[in-house]
Length: 253
Ligand code: BV8
Ligand code: ZN
Image (cartoon, rainbow, N blue to C red; front, side):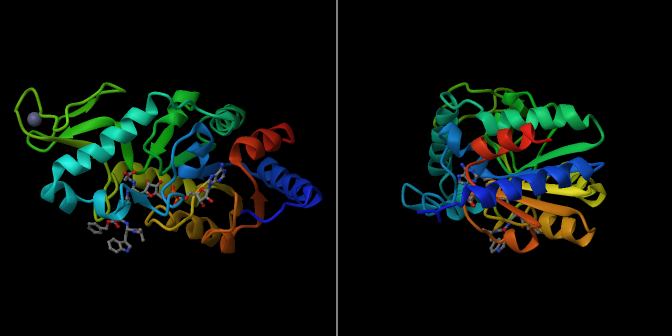
């Protein structure tokens, strides 16, 4: 159970967070699986980090795909299927309003999530550090296709070249897409405020963006149900579900 939150403490913290955001010329936001929890999507550590008894870190790797592509595709096809009923929640929508408020060039939405819900909510520019469940990549010719929510075969193959397709997702032990990572690191280096929403801040290099914000003296706001590895860098901790916290914070700006 989460510690009871004193409503007065939360109001004070929200007022401080709203002040930090108003004072920022550039705002960056880093999201994790927690922002999609209220859309009904499982988080990674929430289920003890397990899927069908497998640690995610053991399924989401190139070695697992090499060893048993059918198991890995079962994992991803199950998550693709859960997207068909998932809708963006009020937390995603609040970040769309925030992007509109700051305008291009002064706002960066960086996500570790692969569920596409930020784009579905209407966020115009989303830096997807870990790829996307909607996209597949050919292990032969390298072609990348957006297959949306289409149901894929158990072992999907490339039409042009016949090779096995893989999810266009960054697995553990894999490098993040260079252009996306560079844009994210640059946005954090230039921001005056970083809001960290719904992440346990365990996975690197994404989690490293939080210390990087601290390093450039940006103010850090954390939105989470509990304290995390990010909390040591946070100037303000907004304890509660992001689907409730973010719309309330937006109304105070
Ligand atoms: C790299 C795609 C190096 C997959 C993901 C040992 C061995 C091997 C590697 C490593 C190692 N030690 C460290 C590493 C590096 C490794 C890593 O960081 N491992 C971790 C586990 C320690 N990182 C990598 O491997 C990265 N690559 O390092 O390459 C390299 C170097 C040179 C040359 C070649 C390679 C690649 C990392 C990317 C992995 N892919 N995703 C998929 O999705 O299937 S990461 C995966 O975890 C997801 O993207 C997810 O987003 C991410 C982080 O998890 P969170 O989003 O934080 O989710 P979590 O469940 O943990 O937390 C949810 C939070 O929300 C909680 O705090 C909860 O309280 C909160 N919450 C819940 N509900 C709500 C809420 N908050 C608010 N409101 C709510 N309603
Ligand atoms: Zn191909």
